[in-house]
Image 1 (spheres, rainbow, N blue to C red):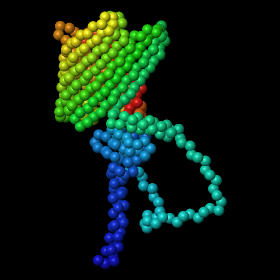
Image 2: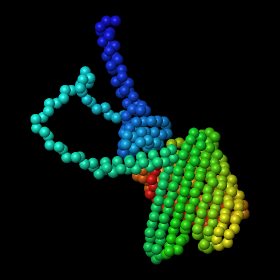
Image 3: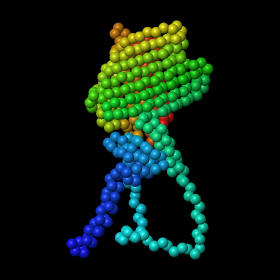
Length: 350
């Protein structure tokens, strides 16, 4: 091989690693320095650990491991910074020292907008790192109203979700407290676990146990302390599973157990059937509307039903505001009171 061939081989050997590095950065290959850009403009620099069709697992230099839905952010390579003589690869000679020492420049102040974005990103990363593989939202609202009476109204709400290949679990908890002129009108807490197993893309099995505790409230406005345990197991069918649009329905069998502690202690159990449906729709401006409803057909009586309607708006990757409408009528257990509530909540997503 002649001198020209050896020179060509040396140039190829020098250019090939640079070409592969540039190609890896352009494709956002895992392990390379990248920038995670959220939909609201927040940024974090680090490395992609894993990226698939549904999620991005990113290790940020300052925040640690972050896992977010793929639709909530994009990954871009870190821009290359030109340095030295690119034709020869040699670094430029150092500039001669100035005979007069330059006066130190004042420290740069961080613009308020950047400082706020950085603090929000810190909150997002800290919350997500704390909950790990669990995702969800913690929301709260409060209101102090004075008209002909003094009202204190508080609500606390939490959702924790984790998904596997064919299984998922959604833990939820609600607490409502209303006091009027020093008299407690509502003091109610409820926890539930919604577990699902997918047989295929459309069919799934569902088991949902829940416990509701009420200190006051009854259909006849008499103080009624009770604990309501409800279990429903059924089969669901997903009609629509497109990104941003879902709809499913199914049938279930329900077992109700009620322990009344006041005014007279007693216990009773009932079995009922139900038809349920769930749907969600992604709207413009990072808004989402979702609803859940259950219908209880009861022989020789008016049917019972309950539903939850939630309209959410993401302010940032961390903070969300939502309006929720809840209602229940003629619960088959016979003791739980009817209600209708409208809540406005501020939540932290993770």
